[in-house]
Image 1 (cartoon, rainbow, N blue to C red):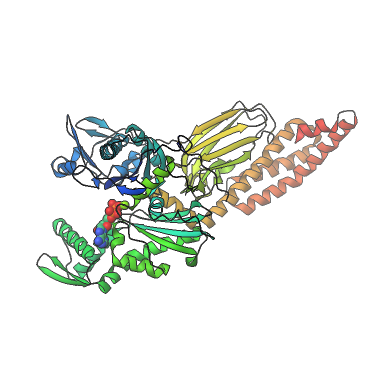
Image 2: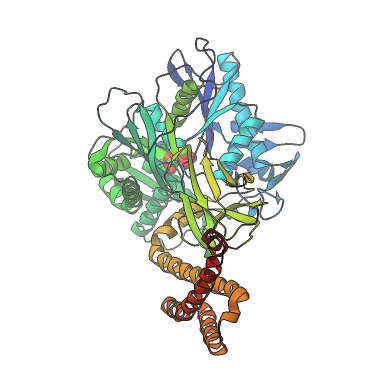
Length: 620
Ligand code: ADP
Ligand code: MG
């Protein structure tokens, strides 16, 4: 695939002046900021020496508190203490299925607002508060104005979630240089994009196992250019699941049938402690109320195997997407707290047959990478390397019969622009509805609708003559712009796709998986739909011809034609592809005879002095 050169903001101006840019990991549970100082990336501390800012905001009537200070209100004033705001970004109320203590305002299909002691607060505003804290911290620590920021987002974030993140940064007064996928940032932190002397392409796997989520990406470094080949993941798979598996095991060992909520919570806390301790010890003791249980590494590995196998399956699928096998992978990078576990490291080592990279603190590695990219984009380091991300889902538009025509397939490197020509279906059609969809299925109804544009003012032409050029453009942040132009007349329409709400991670995953599971069914549906569109076209052409030249047929011929038409119309109500095809064949026997009669008449007409050109223009 051709790689596009990205013109980055700031890259061309004032080459000798040192400019300050920061990288922010805006996380679900905690956020942090890093910057490059004297050529070295480092995370920035607050005045109390803390690096991680819990992503929590508490609203009182007059004041707001953030981070650790806000934590204290979690139990005292949960309704006004907003946690995990990242899970609300770019989502509609209908998307928000998880439990939370908040009162949400607004209608089902919009990103909701929170009702707080300070009134209405949107997820964008609340995220902006967290970003502002980090910006203030950076300014206090660097003592220079911040000129740009790179903010990381999960690889699975869709258009709406990215847009919401960008809006939050703008609201916080940050100049966003780029939104960067979290796993991509991790690879940058390890300098995997710095070795410009490589003679051959290098491929890297980024394995990110956090508390609740799993993400994997494959990056390729080639001739000084860094490209993300493929991404995948699991939205409900992480350290929390390992804890639950441990509790299940403990219950079985102790023959406990039922735990009440408090007991279960206690077991979970102890399981987590034991799990983390096992990262440094060969065996640990679990203290579960009045029971004691010994857990060694071999047993632990067997208990969590089912969860780790799932991560490996995702890795294999992503490798297939990238059309690579294990031998093609030069390095594996570990990200996320759960990769501190020796068991995770062991599985990764065995599967990929190499020692994974895990020397940078897995909590900080994403912010570190973001700061390095920020420093590069602001123009302090011109080593010629570029970062390219990919589209997580295919983008396309609706064509006749509810089919999807894909313009940009999933895992295409961005920024990217693709153009395709379409035409009108009916004579004199003066407007065309362009319906933009996202997903892997063949039928529009199974994909996600992103938006619609109407291209109107198309001058009247016969069907098939208009030339409508549709361009899909995805910028470096993954935001989509769709433009449509009728080229013979120059009529033009455009939308930026900024949907009011986005896909949830689970929706993205469902749309992806559906694409795999329903491939065969989709092929049949597509075939049926295409057959129907074709038959419909045949019928309509015939109607048009009859309007003009019906007098060429005698009543017997007309009857036969009508009967064949009715048969086909009846079959079109069914889903029987071969019956429809048969009916079309039957109709064609009669309509071909009719067409021959018409042609003879026209040729007679032409010979009487009309140019053949006029004839072909009026009937094609
Ligand atoms: P997230 O990004 O999803 O908020 P993190 O990347 O901070 O999560 O990872 C949190 C997870 O890491 C928790 O499940 C925690 O138990 C696990 N974890 C933290 N330290 C260790 C350790 N030393 N060994 C094993 N697991 C650990
Ligand atoms: Mg994380």
